[in-house]
Length: 350
Ligand SMILES: Cc1ncc(COP(=O)(O)O)c(C=O)c1O
Image (tube, rainbow, N blue to C red; front, side, top):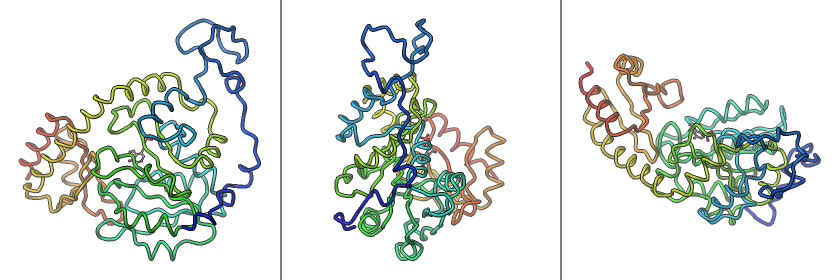
């Protein structure tokens, strides 16, 4: 990428570039902790802990993230799960029925759902047999209307990291924005691409508190990018997209770094144990390497094994309908006792 030539303004949808954002009451008056009388937002004045609208800029939460990740707050956008962040990226940069995006199946299904929803063509370039991107094919598939390339690393459902050589080449050559979805990065041995934000103005990194942090229920997704890209996304996000309870929960968990580190250490240890045992199960033909909190396995007959596990009250995900994933099951790492039960059952299946 020639940084000098990169112009974010050429990628923003013209209506988004022109629009004025909604200005909420809490945007206009920001002194949340003061003892003043708030008669500006048509709220109910009686205290319920949630009778007031939440901070639309989530300043406290962002300042904690900013310190922990060493990224300025104005390079952070929060969403109602990373799914909302991904949708905002589509809506900011992709013109319906004109622009296109590139995804790399087998990968996370929401990219294609969001492309459909936003009426954007999704050009699929299959990963190779090692589940790595095919750079030649990506380049062939790209045209002047290609706005986004989605790279999921570690990839769901395959579990592997995309190599840094491939990602670097893409960052240097791809003309649109590259979204690296790092939902599972906390379980991986490699560092996050957030460390490269200042080198690549076309880089967007998404993360989530749904996996390693154990907070899927509160819905908090995070987007890190340049100040310019974050400003565009901020402009179009719903004003109060992160509710007050989510902000409180997230702040508490982020401050308790030991808790999350404990989860990661335990789940990674369990993953190591499971990997060793799964290869010994006779109907498992392949156990794919993983840097995530799940393992993809190839079995003799995925439908049959899925049903057998279900009969024993164990729910895994049959990923066979995805490209390159015939007869595969994706197994999330559970607690030690859940994993033990899984192994015992797998060993008894005929
Ligand atoms: C790769 C990937 N990205 C994003 C998400 C969604 O994350 P969130 O819960 O933050 O919406 C998932 C959820 O499974 C995922 O696998």
